[in-house]
Length: 209
Image 1: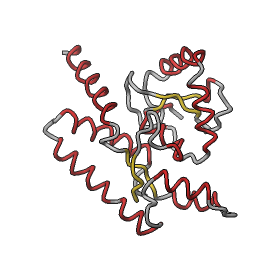
Image 2: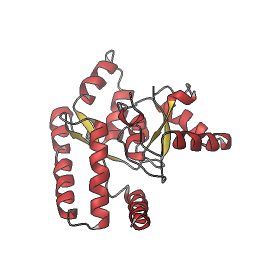
Image 3: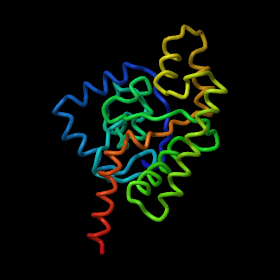
Image 4: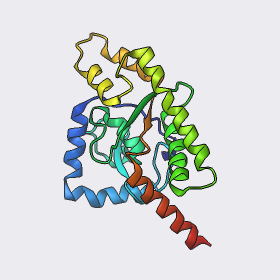
């Protein structure tokens, strides 16, 4: 399997975030993180987006105690936040909305959102079309509320419900829900990162011309 085609799964364990943060705060990890980025050619292992700005290192098997180099992969923040649903909105994981979109994989949606966000930010000829596509995707959050319950289009609230509710079949319920739910990243909340990526892309075009 190529590094740019890993399957993206949602993570619910708050302890994963704690271990991730501990690693991020360790100065010794920073130089190793750069080696992971270089190995992966600064390309997200899930959606295939390429940038040298605002990227993260995730554990491919979602076991944040398994820090072997072969298990560490490069990820953009749109994909990275999917590993830490209870912590959506913290750090570089700016947030988003659950939408009902069973016909598209999460990594495919994130790849599409990168194109949409950059089109909107750069004011290209396709920016109006991009905004319309994004707005139509956002409308699908209403189906989440109808299918699963009021407020559950909020990924943080949904994660809290799944983690805190004492259910014998919690894992099966989460798998059933996540089979059709996708996390639509927030265009507004990721605006700073999008501007960085857009600027980098324009600089690359200028240098190439």
